[in-house]
Length: 234
Image (cartoon, rainbow, N blue to C red; front, side):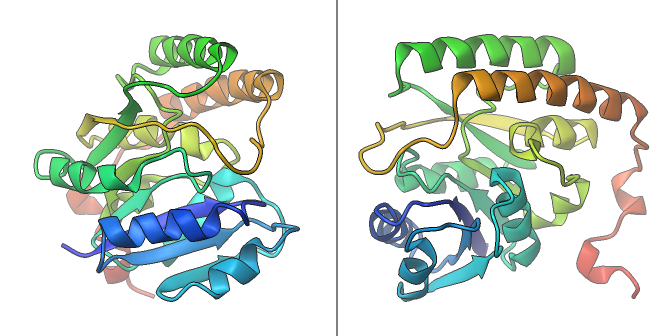
């Protein structure tokens, strides 16, 4: 089973070397797609200087969802794995996520022991409970970026700002099976977070009800009616 690992980076020059090294150690033969989301520091140059990593430069800052979606579109592996570029996700967990696909279409990591501030943990718990109540996606920690899915199912994703938090809901709505896998979570040791609790809350509420409307109105095709994208006629 071939792997493509998609990692979005935005002004993370101090994390590039360590993250890409750990990913290569965990998955020696994987395609590594490092997406530079319009960074203004040396992120792109450091990715370009890393052997074995594919640099996908967006040119301007479009956000985490755009970076992930661009990487998924570029991927060539049978399985796509997503993780953050801030060093808090542990690449050593990737094999367990991939192994879980033997019994599911997508595997979602959940952070067993959060290494964030109390305020971030509390805000995340509230957001996850609200999302599950509205969307019934059954996922306890959609904020965990560590996820794995078969590349053929990327066609079920709809690009919009905030997509990265609703990947499980879109896949479940398409009739796919999801499984959760406990993963490690590490404190940030380099760089600074690009999110604030207040800004995320306001966007999150808007996105939540937008996605709820979309899922209720989305046309659901059976999987045989949608061949893999590579097989579609021009």
